Amino acid sequence: YINSPGGSFTALTAIYDTMRYIKPDVQTFCLGQAASAAAVLLAAGTKGKRYALPNSRILIHQPYTEGTGGQISDLEIQANEIIRMRTLLETMVAEASGKTPEEVSRDVERDKILTAADAVEYGIIDEVLDTLKPTV
Image (cartoon, rainbow, N blue to C red; front, side, top):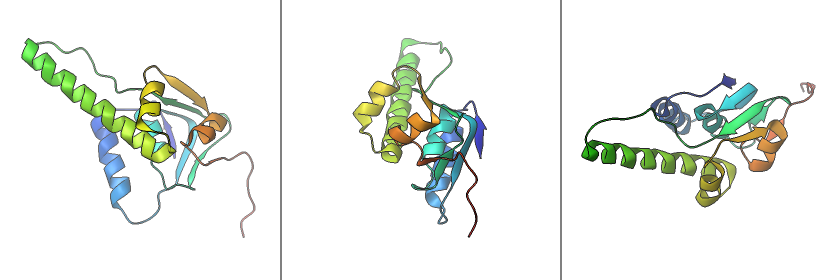
């Protein structure tokens, strides 16, 4: 169950890699919001098992980093790392959604806020859960 404004990129990759490593399917449910890193994890669930409640909010955007200081050579190292992180995020979202990395790159240039229904259309989730379904 996900209700999160996001978090660090390294926390995202640790959880993402674990989700991909384990054998069982991973169901993901958005309750409230899945923003930033949390949106990537929502999308990374097993296809066909990614859900959101009707009033959920999903936000995707490029990785954010706090201001960096130092020598020009250090800034160049940091800039290259940020570009690597952005490319990895775009690849993760593209693989999960069926979009191309180029489409995702355009979409995350600025904040992209999706309703639950929009997230189905985008390919981040598979279904909006609006009613309780009877168990068999």
